[in-house]
Length: 434
Image 1 (spheres, rainbow, N blue to C red):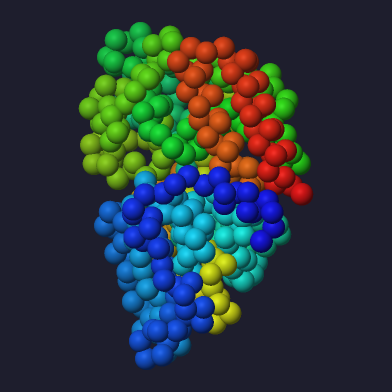
Image 2: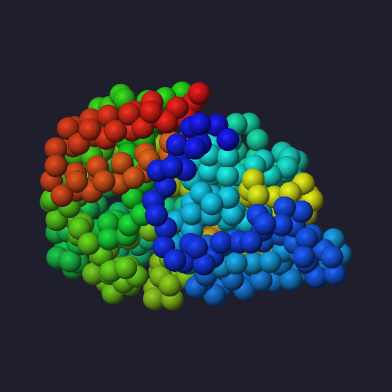
């Protein structure tokens, strides 16, 4: 293992008992034997523990695959999402990763750079029908693939827009910055709502860069220079990013948005806010409350409307033996079938990874003239994946803290300058691009 990878492992946080308890014993059996009937056994970790719908589909895929052939057996271990990344880091540090690993799309390049993941063996032909944001690529190879995608958008009601004479924006013609400002003022002036919009600031972890970086990108800024991935200077602290930060700070300071929200985002369903910025996953619960529900793209603040995309995907690790790699690749290909992709969409309300899976969904959210089709269109037209660089986990943490400080009143330019300094220091010291 290269020295930079040893450094990365050395600075891992100490993980809790769950991580230790969840570690696979696979590393002790490099050939992956021990399966029923002499099958090569592959352990798979998933972050979906507690999500009944997702777990039902995952269990069905594994059962179907194990019963479809006589050479391989997939064994599942489940983790709650909150503890998952720490568990993976602990297993990587001890050389005890499973063969098949669930990974959040934007983190994949870091895990690949660390050497924890290996190329999946999937080809461009294997993923030709998949949304680009559901295929994880690093260093010119496919490392991971997902069954769904998620995107950010705004929920509102047609009756709310009619009340203030606002047009229903489309993907082709989103609201302009001036239009959005005018609509927000009119909605506030009605006095009908506690706040105009719930941006979801009460959510933590990856939500802030996933949800708010696209708004910054719509102003023309970004998290890092995507041409080289060597610096954030002039980008994260450029004039466009500063303009975004000033606007976002004013959303809270001027009383348009609350600085906190219910964890289950009930404010919109209770009529306390007119607009809710959320992920497409909120469709099911919001549609149960309102029969005039609308999903609309985020405004165009000058550089086009942008949306967060990229979600959880499956990959292979450095713990796989040659036999396990072969079996794990067979498993990935087997489960990339449209019927499973459609089932995931039905239980999550998320966007199917393939357009060909639309017609197989039972809820009928996606497809031509279907209620959630705009979400798929937004993903294809406006989706921008988080920067595919090993530096992303650090960029995410730094951006999260900087924007929180800005919302709470810190100077936007000075705060972003400090964020750039921290990002560039990490990139230089880690040597991600060497």
